[in-house]
Amino acid sequence: MQLGNMTFAPGAVLAPMAGFTDAACRRLAANHGALYTISEMVSAKALTFGDKKSAQLIYNENNPAPYGVQLFGAEPETMGQATALIQKYKFDFVDINMGCPAPKINSSGAGSKLMLDPKNCGDIVAAVVKESQGKPVTVKMRAGWDADHITAVEVAKACEAAGAALVAVHGRTREQMYQPGCVDWKIIEAVKKAVKIPVLGNGDIESAADALAMVNATGCDGVMVGRAALGDPWIFAEIKAALNGEPAPEKPTLRQRLEALRTQVYEMCEEKGEWVAMPQARSQALYYMKGLKGAAGLRRACCQLSHYEDLDELFQKVYDAGNR
Image 1: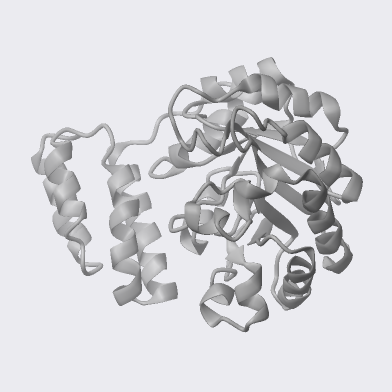
Image 2 (image 1 turned 135 degrees about the vertical axis):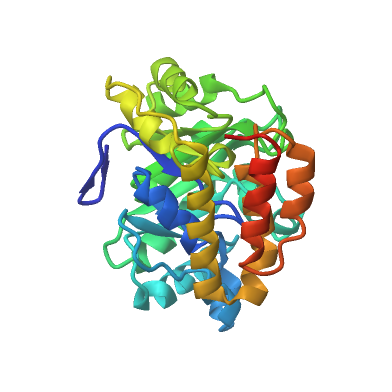
């Protein structure tokens, strides 16, 4: 798979997820084999207004994998202006959000609401490409807005024509939000057949077997993994092995899982300060507890994390519950 001057072997990338994929999360995924990572979505309009909080989302240090900044917005001019503004930061490509289903984002015409207007999608890509200083421009989209507006193929073709270098297709409509069991692989396949640029498949990839099945069924060039990677960054190595016909790597031990959480939270505290980081760490920690004995009590303990040192008490509870 080619993205600008970057060449990737078959594998998986980390999906951008607001509130989760901060610098520490992205670094962890990259260290475990994610092909590339993308920032949490950043408001183009807020950047043009000089919002410092939005700019902080772009921070990305010591990440060994290529890194993209994701912008969201509904106006081509504003998206172009924001792209010009972020050039002072270190990143490898620009990603455009055309998939977020959140009402707050859609109410402004951005996110998955863009799927109703393929022409505007193309105009946005063109504006971003113009200001990207040669960096590749990618797009993350949904299947469409609802069952009556399945526009992924039309949008993908408009984006390709405007200069997009890659599209990632989430196989649900906005109407379907994150409902389980409704990802439509045929839409991903249709997009792959309609464009010449690389296509990533996204939606309900929870294992290496899921990734391999999606690639075989749709012909997509790789997959994008979201929630399944939270608390389990080892999934990237597992998917890479499966797609390249290699033996599956060993599963992580409980100690390795807890040490990964400790490292992630430590880096969050270093980069944001404990006061900001620890409330966010609660949500991250919950994913590491998945499948453990005494999960209900462990979830309560995660929700009580206030200081970095509280992890020691959480880990003791993990072992006290009989996990080994």
